[in-house]
Length: 322
Ligand SMILES: C[S@@+](CC[C@H](N)C(=O)[O-])C[C@H]1O[C@@H](n2cnc3c(N)ncnc32)[C@H](O)[C@@H]1O
Image 1 (cartoon, helix red, strand yellow):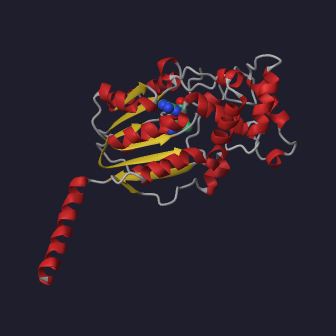
Image 2 (image 1 turned 30 degrees about the horizontal axis):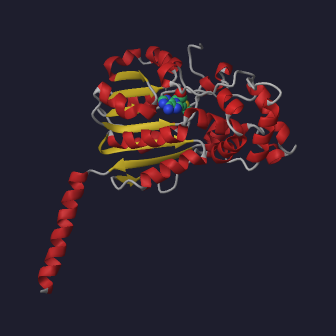
Image 3 (image 1 turned 120 degrees about the horizontal axis):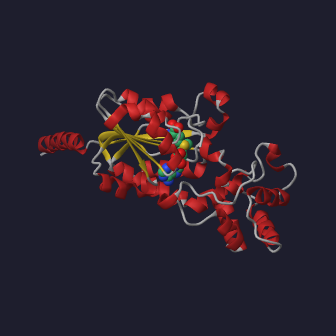
């Protein structure tokens, strides 16, 4: 394991502006990764604020333990899946947070680790599970590719990969597996490429990009996990606490948008999602697809005062009318 993370965090300034950490506040970073966002939260909530950071990736926590040692009890790292946030919070006795941040997907440390099987550019086992041990899923990409029916494969590639050619790809996978089990990422990438027209997407993305995204989402049940994590996170916010989420594809962004919109306890802080600056996109191409949304938990006690005032005003109008 490399002792330093190679991950470059995205939209850090915009994220901090949205969450507005304050001295003495308590914050949850649900996706520790390389630790840049955690570090900002610690700095900005100093000298006495608290930050808890979660990750399914045990290596991310090992690195962070060294990096944040000097913060003593101000920082706590927890190896967990954010899909279990409600239980994890209960177990640790966390009451409420002034801010919660999510920066979804994999870190560059994980993407570059060929043993995870996330890359179609470097050969590795068809695994794709996030994290390790209890925090990881039981299903692997190899299981899906070799045992799911053609229609099921086409459905996940279409729905989770947003891939128009899903039917052709699913057929090619099923034909190929008749000749032997598909166990490696490069083999799958070749099968997918062979099913697509030569000038697929005018060469803008690798032909296997959407299929790999789909498998990753299915293996880790990412969309359902995100829904339950966001619901739990809103429940853990203090009144006027803020939640902010950075997502990297439209399926995730749609979930965040609808969950925020559908919750009348939240005030939306970003009518449209924020995107990285031109400068950041030029410096860090991975940031190009990032979208940031934020919301604030309405303080019901203040709202009640306002509602009461409003009701009083209405009563007064009624009184004068009679
Ligand atoms: C894009 S990176 C976060 C980078 C981080 N914000 C930083 O400042 O470096 C996403 C991280 O979230 C973790 N992650 C993804 N899904 C998760 C889940 N369901 N539960 C916990 N951690 C998760 C990944 O392991 C990865 O380390």
